[in-house]
Figure (spheres, rainbow, N blue to C red):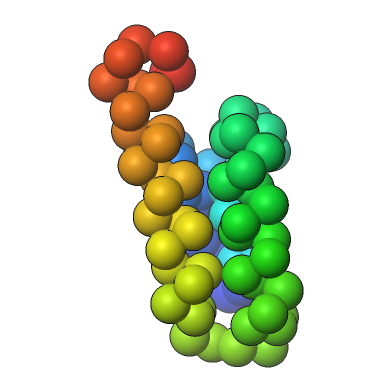
Length: 78
């Protein structure tokens, strides 16, 4: 995997994305706006130069991932 990249946070998605993004385009826009807003706000507070994500960012990321898992389990998302 190229430096500065990782896989999308959406469970099961293997698309390679820049590290500064939460997920691939399709999965980012599938998240409800409230989750996107929380992730953006927490990321902005930490700044792009931080190597270790803040607790606030991790909580926002976990909440979004849990929502994604609930959608997959309910059959509402691939």
